Every structure is written in C-alpha cells, then in structure tokens.
Amino acid sequence: MKSNLSKQEIQNRIKKVFSKNSTSEEIKKIKKLAASKNIKLKYERKKFCRKCYSLFNSDSQIRMKKGFKIVKCKCGYINKYKIKQNGWKY
Image (cartoon, rainbow, N blue to C red; front, side):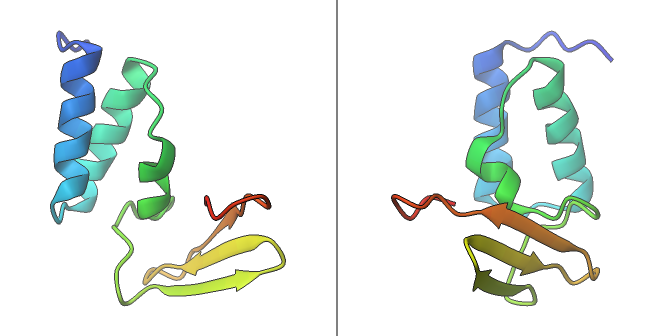
C-alpha cells in the first residue's frame, strides 16, 4: 500500500481526523499511514486506545497515580502514560 501523499498532506489529514469524532477504522488507517511516512503521532497517540483504537471519551476512566496517567477504555484495556515531572505534559 504505497501512498503518493506528501508528509505535509498526511499531517493535515491526521489533524482533520482527530479534530472530529472519528471511528476506530479511521484511526487505524491514519496510524498505518503515519507509520508509512515515519510521522510521529506525538500527543494524538494518547487520545485513543492502543487495543481497540476508539477515542477516549466520558466513558473512559482516568486516574493519576505515582507519576502515571492511567486510562481505562470501555473495552477494558488499561493504557498507562508517564507524566513529565517538571511540567504538566503527558
């Protein structure tokens, strides 16, 4: 699946997908497209579940514990992200 899109076009598409309510299939396609051009998703990768690719919403349970942000998805999978100690970036 070779893509003829440039990096800039792919980055615009990534922003567009995460700005609206997107399905897990769209997120899966965007993740594969970003990997094909070696584009990092940065903070966008923390907006969806690693297992089922659904966006986190009010159904997701969020906890802060011992330097980690722990998000439990509606599918039951637990996502852990390390919190930066000097600031509030996670």
